[in-house]
Each structure stands twice: as structure tokens, then as C-alpha cells.
Length: 266
Image (cartoon, rainbow, N blue to C red):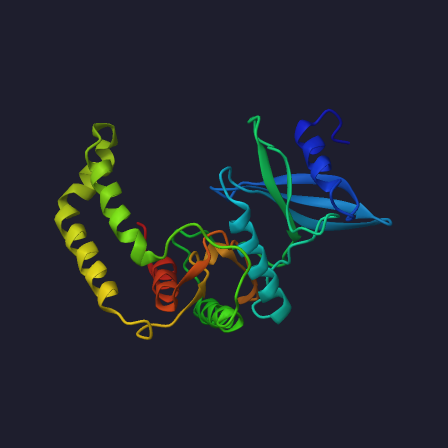
């Protein structure tokens, strides 16, 4: 099975760093846009167990992986909300470095996680969750914030907090609007350019005026939406995708979640 399959061979090479067993099968997860991910089945002592294998985007740093993985394992230890633990390699690290699974002659970081139970019911577009799913999702976000409120992770996230992104956001917006090849983008955004500029300036002034105690800061998920949750009987049974997590204003996590859960994209 899977003979002469280059992807299977590369997955086996990654698995050689672990003591989890032998590869039986794999299937690529088509939902992600940033990383390359696979559901894999591994056999050990006659028992087949599902896992989740992720090849991280090229360019991510070791410090960022240490940050993400120490955060995940902290929440896993607390037990609420349920997350997929990261498995240590034979070398004792939560990641390994091997050749990329894509057609790129460049090494990449890999990690292996538990395969969370439950149903992938939604993406981040038009989720239309039930009232109970919304209530349970709010509870899971609160549980996550409670689990990490005093946590000091290893490593660090390279991306600045939201207040530090405002100036680059404005620069990038103007740069995009100046490119003629982005005419569809320009048609939609240009009428709102002045409005957006003023909103960015207002936000920058607001953040600058805050003292350190004005808004609670802790590690936030920063991508909390129904597509990053697993449901069973309208209850949240898993939270995943901590790629964008960083220390920032707690209210930003809540506001971004409200946007994701209740925006209509029609």
C-alpha cells in the first residue's frame, strides 16, 4: 500500500523521529490555507490510531513554534477547552525538521497532534451556528482565556499586537489601491479609503492613550471562529489552529470572534 508514493515516503521519514508506529494511510486536509496538513493513521501493536500531521508554512521560526506548542500543551493539561496535544519526538522536541512535502527543495518544520473527535461543521464564512452552538463556543473561548491568563509560554510570536499592526495595515492598504492589476479590489475598497484611514488613525490614537491596566492583556487565540472548532450534539468538543495566537488585548479576541460568528458574507 502507498508504494512509490513520494508523500507517504516523506511522512514515514517524519514518523521515524517518533515512537508512534507505522504509517497505514493518510489523507490531505483541504481546508487550510497557510499550512499543509494531513490526517494520518498509524499502526502500533496491532491497533490503528488517527493522528494529525502538520507541515508548517515556510518561514516560520523555531521561537514561534515553541510559543504555539507550549501554549497548546498548557491548555491540554488544564483540560478545558479540549485541544489536541503536541507529541514529543525521540529527541524530546515538539517538532522535527525534514524535507518539505511540497515540491520545494527546502526543509520544513513538522508536528504531530492528537486527532480531535467531533464534526467539522463550519468554515469561517457564513457559519449559521445554532443558538446552543454559539453559547457553547462563547463558553469555550472563556475557558481558553481562563486557562492561559497567567501563563508564560516558551518562545515568542513574531507578529506584533494589533496596535502595532495599524500603521503597516494603512501602508499596505494604500499600496494595494495603487496597483492597477487589483482593479476588482480597488472598485470595492476605494470608496471607503478615507473612512478606513480615519478609523485606523482613531484606533491608533485610542491605543496610544491607554494605560497598561485599561484593558486586560493575555494570550489570545486570534483566529477564533466556527471553522476552528469541532462540534458534537451542538457542543464544542475541540479547539484547534493556534497559528495566530499571541499576547494581546482580550477584547480583541472577543470582537474578532463576534465578527466571525455573525457576519453575513452574501
